[in-house]
Length: 291
Length: 271
Image (cartoon, rainbow over all chains, first blue to last red; front, side, top):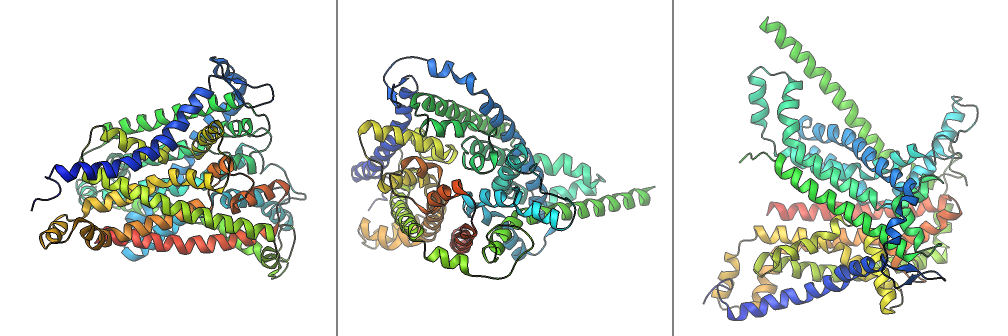
């Protein structure tokens, strides 16, 4: 008997059986749809709304008219990501290096990543209930006498967007950083200390560089997800808080300009793929082999 | 001199520790205060979500149970999440086997394609499928939502099952076939039981994600609402404590599922 790996006759049949359904699925439901929007993005808006075949770059030329959404997204995505790093890094560091009890550490780590899977919508929604004019924060401030009347400054602006996006994405950031920090051999940090290097310089010279791949992975994820978000913008963004995804969404709802929506989707797709491949390259360059 | 340096470094250590503990505690509070707010206000006897608290009530849960639209939406969500999970498990497991077991031209491209949905924002998946369905004249329904979810979730299953297969000792399969088992027997009695926990774990994750998915559902659903879509549409009209009640139930249920799935996936890593 030969192991299935070496035999060539039935192996081809197995390969076909494994590949045919999956390839078909992905061609039909992932590649084809992307091709369709690429084609649609070159079309025109039909007079009654929708799509009308054409071969024009008019939709792409029209994109600067949506500058506000682009600037919103391009400021909020990096800002939210930065805040996520600033919050997630100390948290992950604390869990990995300061909690000595393994079981406690595992439990706390789980506590951090669990909110990740608890309804995206509800996580954005609670911030609306907290920050609003009639919200919990305002009523608390009035109740305790810090303010005499509720204020509007908390909700429907960049501040509420950043808070909400950060809240939604922090767990995504903790996960890869935690994994990266966990991989660093303690002996390396001790060696640095034994050589008389202070804790802060040890951190800057040893721990931080070794954990960079985790930071990069988390940042990539957070930025990509921010580009696709329209739920947070809908709930806490307010009239001037439209994101690219909000504009895309409305092209298929009220305004019905499909080609414009398709063109914007293609732009987001290109941005996301660029970020992913950049981070891939960055990670490969920055990677230090410990084995 | 040496001693002084050491004591400075010790002081640095202590200050850094203290700061770190503060920031980490702050981070945890930031993560959990909104969840607590959601839960507390679902029991608060006041129509508006303001402090001070007015007293304990279960009426928001009562009105949720009597809300027929919401119950229909929950049933729809359960249907979508169940079927999408089953489909995605089958496709994802087959794809993971393809990646682990066979070599073929274009394997790298195949791999990239399968992992693409992880980075692809849901809105792109949703809109591109919406356009294709319109083009092909397919009416939107809960079934189109299922196709969308299954495609978006495959990456979760593939990464988990593939990782498990990579650690799996193939000698066991060889032993099984040496002992005269047919390939299908080996698959069902030897291989499958060994990757079971990875499959169940990723199924639970997929189910939870599908159950409260919005961006894809938003574009692919017809007249039927799933629960998150129902909540989304009521939020247009304003905030009610009823939503906190539903939210609390969702939080508790998904917490249960997630703890279970993390436990199962962790378990599969140890084996």
